[in-house]
Length: 76
Image (cartoon, rainbow, N blue to C red; front, side, top):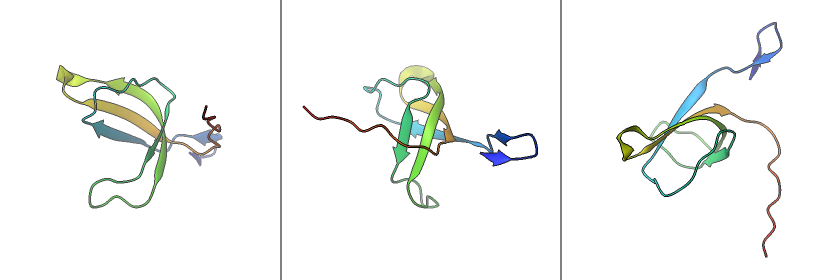
């Protein structure tokens, strides 16, 4: 997000490609990326804004950078 004079607006989006088809994704899910291609630097926390499964062999998530607190998860 950046303030371009009209308040906070998204700066850009990231495309995340996953081979795992067994997971269920929803809009607004929060994804933490720990590893990636050679130009990847550090951990990224992203919010899912769009989900596609082209030709059924991988998952494409369109994400925006996210900055906020993650809710605590309770273990039973």
